[in-house]
Length: 330
Image (cartoon, rainbow, N blue to C red; front, side, top):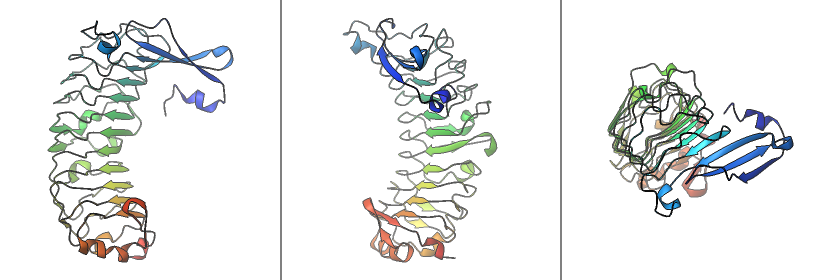
């Protein structure tokens, strides 16, 4: 939880929105005021799409040298920013930012120290920026809880990049639609508090079991990759996992080994729908998944679907099945 916003959640106080007329050129500032005499103010600065908002007069987007001192978010999305250098995101009003949106800019690369000094930054959006490589030091000193790196050109990613050196909150990480062929990690799982990981729509051909082992993941999305088989202990060391998405593998998932889901003692929801090559799904595969409550298998082979009644008792909406009795299996 953002510490800057905590007092507002604990107090039941009035609040009002207003548009500031002292905002920077080509930006819009919206201020939310709280409390008696509107004594507490939080400002959202929107500098997105500067070319359109200037009527086509500003060909080169600019980064504000200063922000209102009560700023908590800055939107620089949909501009023509192609390079960020250390010091560009420094100045009055920057240190209190909790949200920074740099999406839809042709950045391609983000070096070290560009984001240093943004100590309270909670959410960072770098989607649709053309990033090809992640500098291991680009996030040093930050304590993010949400990072969006989706829709870029990353082929290989080291999870060590997200170990920032600060004792941070659990991280939600989005790496979908990148063309990833591999992810690696050298640091121990206790140093990386990764809670949510979206690896969907990439080029992974195997489950990155060794890389993910020991992480405190609760949500893992591997859908629409090129994984064709799940070996034994494919998700070993992910005992905290609650949601697992294996939907619509482009490599046509055709085989799930016995004990592939071994150790997933807290798994609550699993989606393996949209895999027509998956012809055999023995109930033994689900042995030990005593917490499983929802299963989706629509779009798999007929033999798989016909085995469903032995696993789950009722069909739910959108093809989801109620597996409340799965705990009856040994």
